[in-house]
Image (cartoon, rainbow over the protein chains, first blue to last red):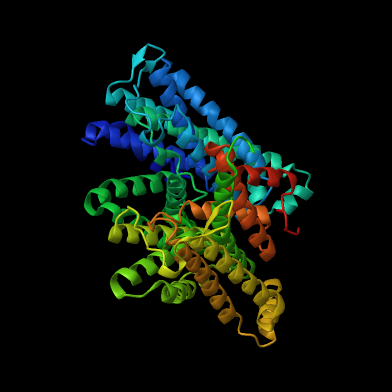
Length: 315
Length: 291
C-alpha cells in the first residue's frame, strides 16, 4: 500500500510540474485526454471483462458535439462539454442496451458494428463537416471567469478533469457496485443465481464508461482545436484497446501508462516512418497479446505481489 | 416504384447481389472458422484485401492472368493463414476468445500497413478479363457479364462449401470437432491439422472473394477494413456458426443494401447495422442461430 502512495505522489508532482519541465503543453494535454479515454475504457474491459470494440463512437461524437456547439452555436466551454458528455451518455445507453444482450465475442462485434453506424452518421451529417471535420474550435473560458486560451491554464484544467475522472473510477471500482461488477467478471452465471440483475449492472458500467470516454473526447477537441473522422473511427477504438492492454487492463495506472506509450510512440514514429507506423503499432499489439497479456503495470504488480508473498513466507 | 425507373432499380439490385455474394463468401469463411476455432477472425477483411492485391501483383509483375489468379491467390493467402495459425493463433485457444479477436485485429493492422507502405493508399484498377466483358441485353436491362459471373461463381463456391461441411466424411469430422474436439482427437483424428486447414480454407475463401472483387472495385489497402465490420454484422444477423445462415443473410443483406441505394441513398451505408440492431432486439441469437 505504501509503495502505491509513493508512486501516486511522484506522479502527481510530475504532472503538476510538467509544464515547467520544458515539455510541450499541447502534447501533454493530448496524453492526458487519451489517458482519460483509456481509463474510461478500462472500467469496462478491466473490471467487467466486456470488450467494447467501438469506444471511439462516444469519444468522437462527444468531441463533435462540443466542437460544433462551441464553434458555431456560441455555447460556453463548460456547457459544450456537458452537452457532449450527455450525447455520449445517451449513445452509450442505446448501444449498451442492445449490446449487453450478448456476451463476450458477440458483445465485441455488436459494439463494433454499432459504432460503425455512428461513424457513417458522422460522415454524412451536416454539422460534423464530413471529410473535413471541424476546425478552429475555440477553447473559450470557464463560465467567463477564467480564459482557457493559454496552454498552461488549459493544461491545469485538463489535469484537474483527469484527476477527477481517475478518482471517480477508483471510487466506482471500490464501491459495492464495483464489487458486483467484479463478481460478474469472475462468474456471471453465479452472479445471476445470487439474484443480481446482471444486465442492468453491465449497462450502468457501459453508460459510465461511454460518458467518461465522451468527456475525454470533448476535452481533446478543445485542446487541439479540431475534430476529424478518425476520432470516431474503428482505428481509434482499436488504439484505446491497445493502450489499455499494453499498460495493463484491470489496473488503475495501466491505461495511463499504455496511453502515454502509444501516443508518444505515434507522435515520434509518424515523423520517422510515415505510413509504416500502423505496422509497428500492430506488431506491438501482437507481442502484447502473445507474451504479456497483463500489460506492463499488471506484470510489475504481479512480480511485486509474488515477492511480498515470498517475504511473508520466509519470516 | 418510388418514382425511380425500373432499370435503375434492377441495376442497383444486381449490384446489391454482387456485394451480397462477397458478404456470403466472407461470412461463410468467418462462420466456419468461428465454429471450429472459436476465433472471430478480424483479419478476414485484410485477407480479402490481400487476395485482391495478390491478383493485382500477379498481373502487373508476374504475368499471371485472372484465371490463374483465381486459383493461385487463394492458395498463397491460404498458406499465409496457415502460417499465422501455426505461429500465433494456436497458442491462444486455451484463453479467453477475446485474445483471438485482438490478435487478428493486430494482424489486419499490420497487413494493411504493409500494403499501404508498399503501394500507397490510392486504389488500383484491375481489368475485367476479355471473355467476361460486355453484357447481355435482357430487353428490360443490360446485365454485365462480369457481375453475373461473380454471383454465379460465389454461389457455386458457397454451395460446394456447404456440401463439403454438411454432406461429406471430412465435413462430419469437422462438425464433430466443433462439438467436442478432445473426443474426436481420441478417435484418432488429427484435430490440430484439421483446425489449421480449416483456418487456411476460411482465409482462402476470403482471398477468393478478393480476386473476384478486384475487377469491380478499386484494389486498395483499406478495401477490407470497413467491409469486415459489415460482414460481422451479417454474421450476427445470420447467427454465428450457422453456415446456411451466413450464406442466406449475406445475399439478402446485399440485396437490401442495393435497394436502399435506390430508395434512400444516405442510409445505404448504415442499413445493415440498423437491421442488426433490430434483429438483436427481436432475436438475440440471430435469425438462424440456436441458443
